[in-house]
Structure formats: C-alpha cells, structure tokens
Image 1 (cartoon, rainbow, N blue to C red):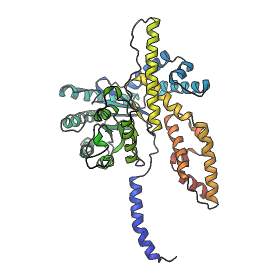
Image 2 (cartoon, rainbow, N blue to C red):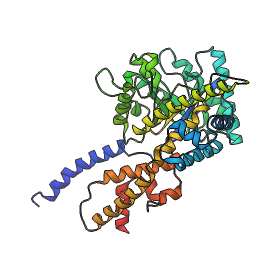
Image 3 (cartoon, helix red, strand yellow):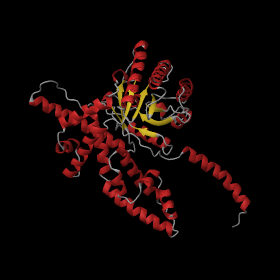
Image 4 (spheres, rainbow, N blue to C red):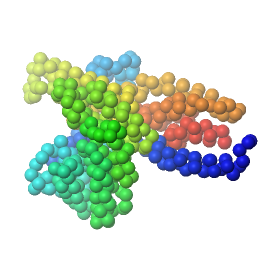
Length: 444
C-alpha cells in the first residue's frame, strides 16, 4: 500500500468518530414488543377493570355482527378461501378473550375536554387510584399511560398540574411503583421547548417522589403542519426527540388535528388522505432507525348500529350493514397504515377491536408461507457466499424479511413455533440484524 500506516490511522480516527456518532443517533429499531394499537378513553370514564369489560364488549359485538367466519370473511373482504377466514376469525376471537386491549391511554385532552380546574383535579386523582387498583388486581393492559393537555401558553399550567396530581396520587397509592410500560403523551407539539419542559418536569417529579431516575417516559403527537416543516424549511421532529433528553419512545400521528391544520374539510378528514401520507413519510424519513416507535391515528367512523332495544328484522339488518361498512372502512385504513410501515394505530371504541386485529393478522398471514421460503433460501445463499469469501451486498432484502417475522411475532399474528419454520432461532430473529446472523453463523 502507498499510504503510510500512521496517515491511514489519522484518516480512520476521524472517520471512526463520525461513524460512531452516526450509530448512536441511528441504533436501529428496538427489539421489544410494540403494541399494535392504543385505545384512547376519557379519563372520567376510566376504571381499573376497563381492559376486561371492554374486551367482553368487543367480543359481544363480534358475535352479534359476525357470528361465524363466513360472515366475518365477507364483512372484511378476506381473500384466501374459507380456511384463511377461519384462521383469522379464530385468532381474533382468542385475542378478544385474552388481551383485547394492548395499550390504554387515559385521556385528559380531546377525549376529556375542557372542564373546571376542580373537576379535572378530582378526575386526575380518581384515575390514578383506579390505575393503582388495576395494578393490585392485575387487570391493566400491558401498556398504559395518560395524555395530558398540550404545553401551549394557554394549556401548560393545566397539563402540568394534571400530571403532577395523577403521579403524586398514584405513587402514594402504590408505595412508589408505576405500572409496566407507563408513558405520558404530550399532544400538539410544535417547538422543542415543549418536550424539553416536560423532560425537565419529569426530573423534578422523580426527585420529589423518590422514583428511579429516568423511569418516566413520554410520547409526542404529530398534529400540526409545523411539526412536519418548521419556518426555516427543515423537519423539526428529531429536534423534538433530542429536546426530550432520551425520554421519548414514540411519535403518534393525530389524523384529524393534522388534516384540519391543512384546511381539509370534515368530510375528507380521513386516515388515507394524501396530506396524511405526506406527513407519514416525512415522519418516517426523519425518525427511521432512531428506535422511536411510530403510530398512526384513528378511524372516527364508529361501527355502531343506529337502532337500540327490541329491534325488527329490518332494523337488525340495517345495524348489521352499518357495522360492516364501518368495519371495512377501518380495516382498509389499518391496511393502508401497515402498507406504509406504521404498525400501530389508535382505536376509540371496543367495536373497532375486531377490525384492528382482523387487519393486522390478515396483513401478516397473507405473506407468511412465501416469507418463510424466501428467508430460508436467502439465509442459505448468503451463508454460502460469506463462507467462500464472496461479497454479499443484498443484506437489505434479508433484513426486510427478518423485520416481517419480528413484527408478525410481536403482533400475535404468528407463533414462536411458526417463526422457527424459517430455520432461524428466536434469538436470531429478536437480534434484528441479518448481518449479525450471517457473521455468527460464519463464526460457528
């Protein structure tokens, strides 16, 4: 080589510094389970056994409007034959019986409204006591949190006060413990100083309440055009993440506030509107591989029939048609989100749970057999190329297949046994790195 060793080392020293800094910013997707949905419910209505009662309600609705897999498959337009519809139907029924709600957000913002300070104070206290009871009774969803009011000039005092009362009450009731996977949602973020203020408040709360340092985590909401493009023409989302001081774990999209901020009229404020796709792609590009989870919003067309009480056959049929139309609309919206790489979304009513799980399970299972064959073959070819010293430069394809199996497994669409059909181990799948799989197999 022409270059002297000491000069090469000088070159690589600065390059290594830059590479390591890049890797710190982009560590890749997190391997832990991401919920497939978040249920938003008004804080005044929250009860400790909500996941159980709402799950039962969702099952009743499914049994009423899709009493068997044939009706179910037709309602959602499932392709793949009768066996496929039955497979999805059985999975949805099992899910509603065991874990209908994966993530619950106790809502003090849009789902609660603006009330007197005295009333919101009382609700913050009572909701915290219900969470404490749920912790003791083991009835909470696997993921849970609260959404406070935004840190705008008008709402900052109310948002901070609600969070203070809620956490102070909860810690007192539980002896210093928080629920597993607890998070605070900060809505309508427009400037980095808002998440920065919340992060600083977290530090104060942890000190005052005797909580472990760094235990409080936040999510943020993309609900305004300013969150997608700042006045200087840049995307500010990563600035929001940095301002959160390592406490932000997810970014959620607010469909209806965002479309309203784009002057879209109410009739067309839908999840698959092009302005939403633009925001989704901008968010994905800004935060891809940073480890921040992304979530889409909700369909606001509720699958609830118009008639109640003792119904005539005509009224029952009208209810069925209304529910099926709303289910299919929501199903299509969820499929659109999944197609865009958003593997989590919101639900607003237990009647939406069947469409949520139908869409997620169908999305992954439709391509399962093909993905198994492709990944098996791909690993074998890549391993052979590596062993004989050839350059294997198509790791991105293998990584994409690997991501499919991890997402499918975490969502409940496939089982651990079905993952093993690929010839990979669970450790390899959860390691999330196709490159490391090849390196480890070569070493062995």
